[in-house]
Image 1 (cartoon, rainbow, N blue to C red):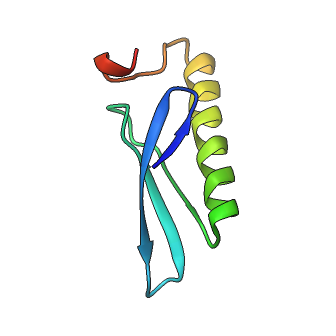
Image 2 (image 1 turned 120 degrees about the vertical axis):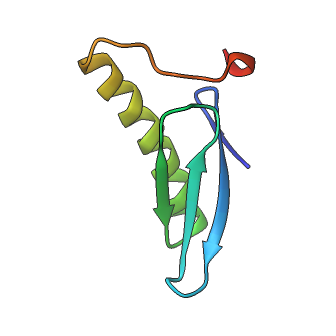
Length: 70
């Protein structure tokens, strides 16, 4: 499981596409990412969480997290 900024992600591998796919699980908002290698996957996860925080800030709202992750 990946961790970044208080968020966790579940990861699976799509054999047909040849890529890893991840979903952030500590939010009700939808945050997904993918990478062709483990290094790409980890970077995409960090970038997605950071971008999520940026978009929330631009919209004037707080990022969502499950109550247990706050």
